Length: 77
Image (tube, rainbow, N blue to C red; front, side, top):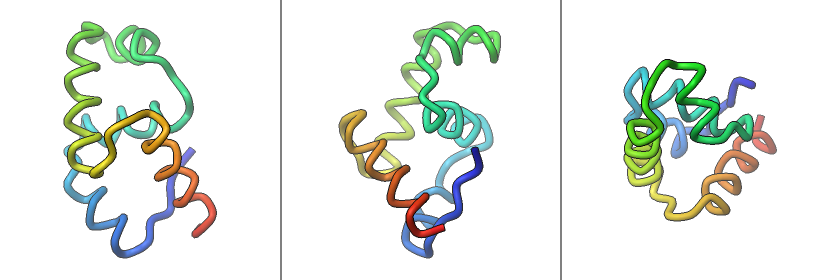
């Protein structure tokens, strides 16, 4: 799933690096940390760390906030 972004959210998403954006997309598809780690040949702790960085950059603090952010992007698309 590719997310279409509004200007404000686009500026938040532009702060994500390539790997962060890749993991953002996978998280937005509902994939678990362990699934992402396996698919990308990373350690689960690495994925968890990147997830925390993504949350900080998107200014969300919980999974619920993250998925609200994702859903808002889908509605705006």
